[in-house]
Image 1: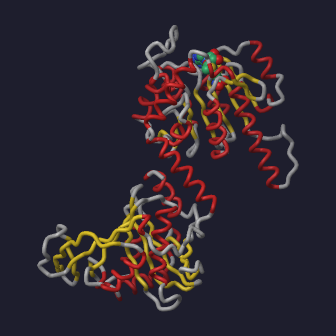
Image 2: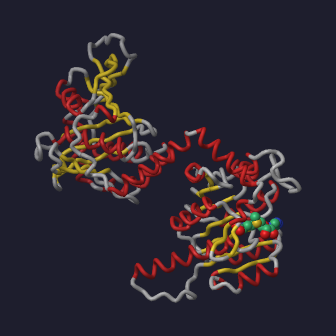
Image 3: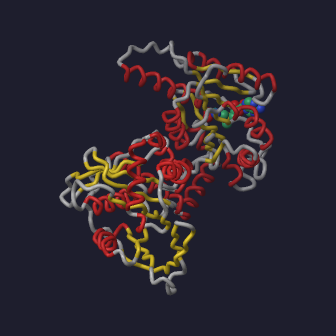
Length: 482
Ligand SMILES: C[S@@+](CC[C@H](N)C(=O)[O-])C[C@H]1O[C@@H](n2cnc3c(N)ncnc32)[C@H](O)[C@@H]1O
């Protein structure tokens, strides 16, 4: 899982869009408690804040900075530090519905995470609840977040904490000297350089655990829903593919070699020729399912195959919604549409598209996609649609694609995509498209680069080309993120 994917996931938890409960299990797999992340909605939960404040005061000697906590200060810390940090989660530990303590991590950076804030504030529950909580959180970070290492710090004279952590698989590494700093009635322990002596004879012990060194497999993967497990496996596959330079080169060589055979002409969708790699059509259907658009705008119709793919996917969304709700579907009553633009809709293609059973979902406009009257018509058409997906596949010159992006990308809904095809032209040999106005240095990829300089609302979704390997759209899957 990449750092960015981890962040996106943590933010969705903090904002309450994703639910997460980590069961705490003993060695026999029996559930003895749960860990539930603090989310924004809990900022108003006075009882939780009261308890956390009480614990912070009760156990202040175990923290680097020692002050008298108040509910207002705790709430502010949660709001401004914990919940504002997309690399951090703080969990509440429960025995049944009884709040017992807290534990969390921060600095999740793709590879590792810093475990912090372990406190048992209340009696009750399993005597080893905190030990199993440490193991459960480390296990979740290894398995669900796919980190290879977790680490933490404890005061070197805290024998109980050291034992607890050793029991679950942590090893002690460097020791850091601490220097006492007193400011009013607050004490701060300032951390020095590893290996150096402490003027106050007080040390901070760093502890680390790798996936393999985790000894208490209490959670035993049973907490991880099999679906998440599979998704994580796929994410790892994709990350591994992205690092496999040899396979990427082989795929690219294959990609180029197929061009001289017009390989992309060989396929059709619902009977209409589609000029795409099958891999990109698979990516398109995944995007449509995820985004659930009500309008797909496409520039570049040709034979109409990509219009059919879009229409078929929209029809399937209608079908699934009706089937899920137990409703009868009138295929022609849906509101979802595909709008295609082409400078030259050949008569035989137009006739075949209009005669197709999917035609009721498709509208076409003839004209240059960058002509002001066409742009105005499309904007007019798009009014009233809520979730718009855009595909650019017409004239592949830099100027044309950049003008299309300027004209239509603002219509793309947040969370949806603008897919810019044929960005691969930039990566091909100089003579790949003889007789075409586009080529190296003047193509959709150069236009995307230019456009993104001033449009931070779009980001390249690398995970799509990374998993496809064979694609005409490297750096062409643009996700609207804001
Ligand atoms: C690669 S094909 C489209 C393939 C189609 N999207 C598919 O996947 O099957 C490119 C199309 O863009 C059209 N085109 C070229 N210049 C254009 C322009 N300025 N405005 C709109 N369409 C244009 C061409 O007529 C051609 O039909």
